[in-house]
Structures are given as C-alpha cells and as structure tokens.
Length: 76
Image (cartoon, rainbow, N blue to C red; front, top):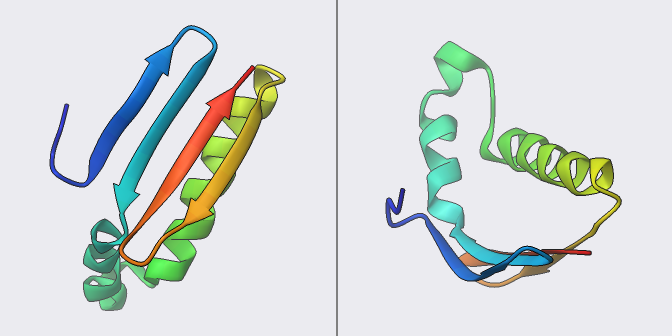
C-alpha cells in the first residue's frame, strides 16, 4: 500500500527494487522516550530484516544510500 514513504520501482519474480524515504525513521526518534529507540536503531533493524528475507531465499540484497532516501535491490 503506497504511503508516500515507500515506492516500488521494479517488481518481477526474480527482482524487486524499491526506494524508501528516510523520513519514516524520524517518527521513532520522536517517540524515543517511550520506545527507547532511535532512527538509527530502526534502520539497523529494517536492514537486518530485509537482508534476512533475501538470505532465506538465497538472493542478494544491495543498498544504495541517497540523500533523502535509500534504494534496495533484492534479486536472484
């Protein structure tokens, strides 16, 4: 479901490419008093989860860091 933070650029059975705005991580930084979590923590968790999914399928996962967003490519 598009929410403005994530955009799928390419999708096929053997490759998925999407980009995500880094701003979604800031919400968690604002909630730090409650959740004791920083945007950096959330990025590490998000990256680890995404790479685990790729690894489980024996696919490769590539990250490209841009200024306001990052691009993730997962492919066979």
